[in-house]
Length: 315
Image (cartoon, rainbow, N blue to C red; front, side):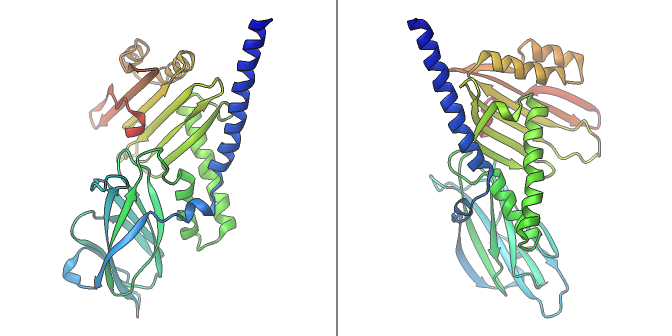
């Protein structure tokens, strides 16, 4: 009887953990004004507009429009270390990639009052925010980046900011589009890793759902084991479907690891790489974690497979 009682208590504890996680998941997947109200950036300098200080210049040819310029600096939130990465800007009438150097990215003869900026650095959570564009000024913005899954904004928080900008603040339309992005995120996890949404709870969700984007997540499976996953799809300039990608999965459960491994390996196009994958060529054990990490490198001559980064959260 004592043995049965022990297993019953373990089962109840796992159920409680999983159900409490479901509540956390509902909160994580629902964009909140609290998370969006955090300040992730500071304007550290502002000077009068001077065209000679601009690097890239876009002219919007709007009569009576104004000129503006933005320079982005990415820094580690905790150490203050300057980071490599990139940022994008979108606004009514255009957008593009911001340079992360001494020059400003400038917009001339523009009428848009605001822009949405997204900042990215490998191993850090993306950050998206709305910026009021200063008229006839050049501004330098310092963005505080959080290491992945250490308190930064979630994937859906960032997408919500973007959608509010692209829909002109139409929340109903933005919510409908956000639901489509949510479905795409979880469908990708099932397709790439063979994991059904109902079987896990995520405590961290990060992503860039555009071209050359990725998904990253951390959480708990229904058996109580810990999971981490990452999938990156590379820019496919050829327009083909067999472009480069990188995948990483870790779990503290041997059974779950083997399930995901079988799912990933079975979908590899080459019999040679499929055999290598099933034989353990792309896996490693670190502490209690079993990790699967592989990368497909593609070019005009074909593709090859190699080991990826075995730290899923640092990818």
